[in-house]
Image (cartoon, rainbow, N blue to C red):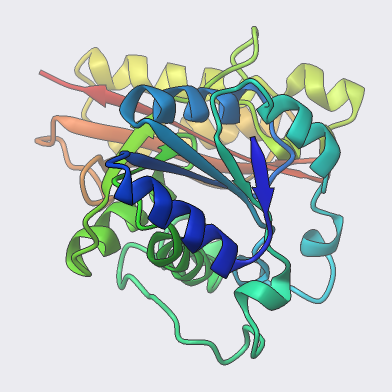
Length: 285
């Protein structure tokens, strides 16, 4: 696996693969890789002959890019390289912030996806999905992949990326990979390391709340508000500080009604210093 740090180097290598008739897959990450990320690489390898993995902690998607969550986000480059070696990745793109945003990111051209970006997580993290969409669009232009692979744990992010990819006519197939979980059901996440030992024991209650809500919906219950309220109460009882717990239509994230059949239940909640997100898809009827 080769590691490149400049856009020019990246484009030269990708151009050589293109000229050789290779199919290219992209896996964008912010590093601090775990087994869930490696599943994305595995899926990318199944779909293309060449796999590019990017590691870039994008300041645009943090509400306080001068400190706070951005500064403490775990950077584990050497460990990430060890995990990627032999994983099926051909190239690691590891640009500096100045390479990605040579004129700074505060006034950079932005990619915004109206409506779907300012609800749920977007309501609690203003500008987050603009930062996500902008940096992913930049990576699409740099790599020009045939396919890009993302995890379904951040379901709203996946829909944002699908939407702008289609509407801006990027010739990239977007593939979602199911969430990889710990043995107790907790979704794997780089932020899980913020959990203390006692918090880690309680963290799987988030997934259990999703499962309980899913069972009620699958059994035919139609009072969605009551299901959401009960789930929030169960999370609070388990020591969480919920931001939202919401049943939505799977294809556009509008609030679900009793007649909708393709659903996704989404939740975000704080446990100590860790903000955890998760979701559960289901089909009724």
